[in-house]
Image (cartoon, rainbow, N blue to C red; front, side, top):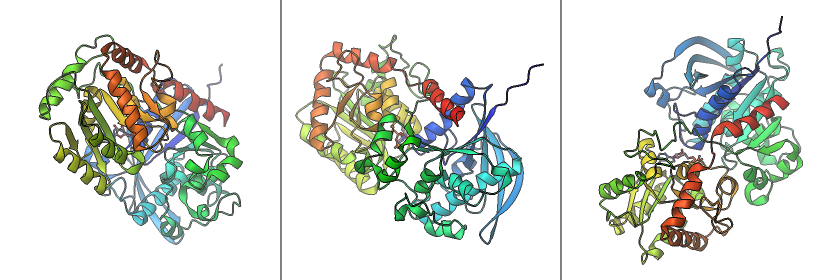
Length: 482
Ligand code: ADP
């Protein structure tokens, strides 16, 4: 009789997971990576996701089942939780609710104390949920600062708790500067104590993300480029010394995208489906959009697009500064984004000054994002740093060629036209200034004017393989190695 193979039990803990809750790339990854792992390793892995039960999930109301109530104590408090289970593409998704997580709350309050309480309790509640389920996991895969305190709790509060013995931990870093600073009062209230790890700088010994970095068995940055960059003072956010010293546990794996959701051939959010082979319909998306925006309707005018959080990280100021210097050239620009009130106002003002060629849609809108990826010719991504970036991958898959800084995951996912014109999928530039951006955008506009070359680049970009499968295999290897 064959002994049945024991599956590795993995808990994937995140603040977001599409389609339940998505505020950015973390949501895309947490929705798609566990599903891809399950699909490709269903005989080897028992992977489940756990999320806070946010208000957006309550509103979405996916099919779910209540599992039950459990309680645990943290410092002098008794924390009562409710546990539900739903699923995303076959991956069981646990949803945890309690007074601090509170399913009337936004994914992020934007108030550090409230976010600190929400995510510090979630980090404990997810461990306690495993006990309540009597599910002894092999691997805890935490993501970003929100769940970084779970690996830390395993190394401290739960160190001698028999139920949690032998669990290996991974922390994925999607964005190092967001380290959970400001959660200190909340952490103290829940009984967390500062770390004694002498390798950590003082400020980091009571800050969620660094504590997770110090506790995790593996630290995975979301691209190989970013994994190298965070070892340097320019990108290391004060953690470079620690990361250099412990570089043997740091690695990078490039994110993938969900190629079923993001498929121009079948995408129901766009009016004219197309593919690299059946390409002629693509332009009709652009013509429709030009009409809707009251722009000149002309396929020969390049349409510049961006879909982004409006923050300095994304290089929005470089865009707003550069476009008025390029008014002697023919182009149109459509921005979809929300975030910093100052940048929203600046974008709004630029559109008001040039209504014939610039428009801004200042909100988060998933459907419109698909339309932009499918309609634009040039996708702007002049990020100051970019751990991975998914928008440029969606854009390429839809034949919208990126102009982007040569950093992090952008450099890992885009083949630059100047270096490799044969295989190019976009335009990269090193100099992270408005001038650098202007030069690169000018080159893209010149290239657009040559339809033969442009179409070749579009074909390269659309045929590039951004599916999760390759990267999921790398994650699986890490799980196995642990
Ligand atoms: P980050 O996670 O740093 O925001 P990524 O490029 O990794 O950047 O992921 C951004 C994700 O959020 C993409 O899926 C993008 O389409 C989406 N997105 C960003 N802003 C908007 C918006 N205003 N409306 C719809 N989707 C958006």
